Length: 249
Image 1 (tube, rainbow, N blue to C red):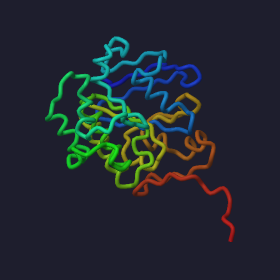
Image 2: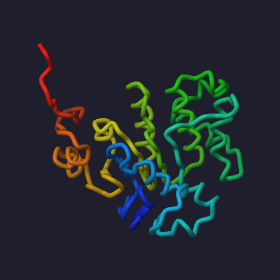
Image 3: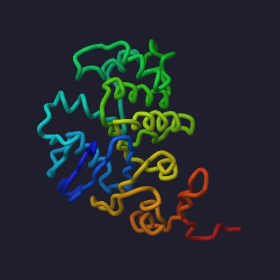
Image 4: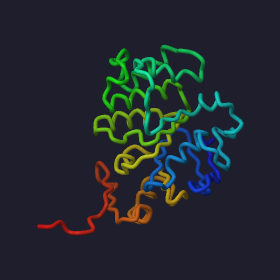
């Protein structure tokens, strides 16, 4: 059974007839140019936008789930996170247990271990670097033990070290009976981690499938409107715009 099954998802002026399935154990990369509908898709799947269509989580229509059940099964990591109070890291991670109405210290500790933030448990969130904060917010999501994580640009603006840490953690979560759907701009980074891709163009699916079927020069060039060079055989994969003019001597 599919972990999530989406049929004819429509959001006026943002998404039109988006349909796909994601089996357990996979990470799906949602890619496309700015304004293609990536964030809108994730927010619709999280129930944050009033979209039309049929969305089923492990066979159950999403609209049949209570808000609590949905929060227990789907973890949403927005592109920008902030705290109104200068809470300690462990307190922020513990907030992930709110849908379960408990404070399971073992699960909280495991979430911090998975993201490598145990040593900063007592530190205030406002005293951490951007990369450290990104791992704290991810730990909060992991503490909720969701079956599906929706992550909007989780590696954006991070250095190479923290990009790898975040992506490794998401990849690990996607193993087994769980899954991850993430919106991401760094196509070469995504090619290293994602099992399949959903390429959006103007709110519609332009291509869907494994990397070799979606990350093609033809599909990407058409979606992004610039010539793109792709070499998936290279380690790591190379996906870059072609030079359109010669550099001056």
